Structures are given as C-alpha cells and as structure tokens.
Length: 358
Image (cartoon, rainbow, N blue to C red; front, side):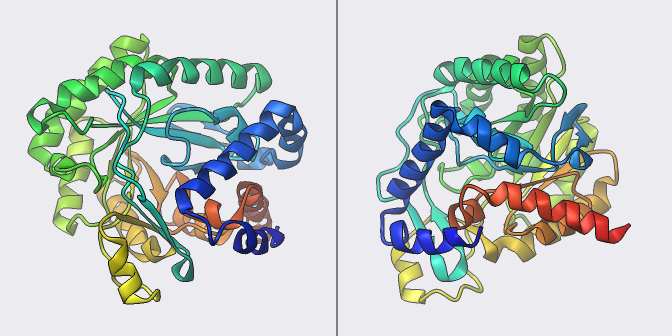
C-alpha cells in the first residue's frame, strides 16, 4: 500500500494535476476493461460486516467516493471494483459545458490538498444518463445481493441565470433520476458564479421541492434527495439549512464541499496565492468539515442521513465521522495521493477498528 506514495512522487507529482488525474483514471478503467478488475474486486470487496443501511438502501461499506472524480459516469464499475461502497457521479449539469480555462486543478502536496476551479466540466445530463443506466444494470448483475450504490450530483449550468436555475436543475433531475440510487443538489461549489447564493434558504426551498418532485415522477419511485453544503457557511446558516431539510423532509445532507479559505496551510503563501481562485479540498478541511457535521447532527438527530466528506484520509478518520453522527463517509483528495488500493485499505482498517472495540 505504501509503495504508491513513492510512485506518485516519481510519476505524477511533477505532472499537470489534471493530466495526471486523466492518466490515472484511464488506468483504472483499463484494468476493468481488460478483466483485471474482476480479479481485483475479489481482493478489495468490503467485508460483509461493513454493510450499512441508509436512504432505504444497503451499502456494501459506509465509505464511498465523493463527486468530482468521475464527473461523467465513465468509470462507475471500475471504481466499484476498488472497494468503494458507493460512487457519487458528477457534478452533472443540464447542459454540456467545457468548464473553466486550464490550468484549473492544482496540488498542494505539503498540505495533502488540492485546489480546483474545474467549473462543472461535463457532457450534460442527456449524455450521462445512458451511462448510469448501463452501469447500474451491470452492477446489479455482478452483485445480485448487495451492489455498490450510485449517487448522482447535479449542479447549475454556467450559462443559465440564477433566476432560471430551478428549471435547469429539473432538466438534470428528469434525465438522471431513473438510473440514480440517490440524487444530490449541489449549491455549494465556489466555481460557478453565483451558485452559492442558492444556499440561501429562500432560494433553496423552492429548488429542492421542485427537484424532489421531478425526480420521483421521472423515476416512478422515491429517489432519496440530499443537499450538499459548503464549509464556509456560518453556523446560523447551517442551522437554517438543517431546519429547511427537516421541513422539506429531505433524506439527507452532505457536509461538506470545498472551501474558499486558505487558512492554516503550510505550503508557501506566494505559491498558494499564485494558484488563484478555486475550492480547496483535502487534509486542511478536516477540522471544519467535522465541526459542520457535529452541528448538523445536533440539529437533526437521527431524522436525516448525514454524509461526511472533507479531509478524510484514514480508517480512523472515517470512524471518527461515523461516531460524530455520519451514516456514510466519502473521500476524494486522498485517493489522488494514496492510489487505487486506498478504499480497500480504509475498509480493512474499519474492520480492525470494530474488532478491537468489541
């Protein structure tokens, strides 16, 4: 397992971060296409003791991959073969869009962090929907008992004005809900102008109600609906979102997205400044994301599913989030630093932690 950080340093650390991500993802998909992934899956499959009930679903493990890695649903099966209990695809928008100008993804290796201003680059909901449908059917065939879960994260198309945002979200909801196990409304990325204004409760209420209704109607069943919030919200705003989620009878909240803060970094300040705007993810987010999780737990108790994400690197981190009130936990940035066996290592670590606790 610890061989990969050395490989990363030699092969990827000097390379443009987005190019390195593309090469790594292509490697994971190639393993699946060649059939090697099926062999790998037997070694990385989560222990049955990790099965977790949430959102009316059974997850093979409480640990999954956050949105952002597989933006367009190209590698769901391949990623599931690495041991993730769920894969959240996206962010997907109603219209296809190229995202922001490159370079737009940067590593802060000393902080085990990443800064991104990708801008929701994706093929659009209509193109992604068939991929989700195919992946869901394939996972069901391979795992007739308990299969990895597919989440779908949707956001606003950049060219759409804020006053038209709801209809834009509905385009994605109607296209993607039939193949989704759960749906996430992303109003917290800092990389789409004005998007975070939708976290205001007055804007959020009609948006979430409309998306939930449209998703259920399109799928012909209830699609669990969650909202993903930013760590930069004030505590009062977090409380407001919690009350709104309870009032609308949402299924859950994901805490948290990336941060616009640059506090507490050990990387050279001039280097950080030179990278420009974007959302920061990774280890520096750990403290605040945990604070937000605990505040949400105090506010909603057991009435909503809380999914924790932000600064998660180890099995101990995952267990800490579970003990703080999360039902499920996601990671992403550490995957870039730890490599393809990271999820399997997390799962094995969780089993060991639980055995020691008995």
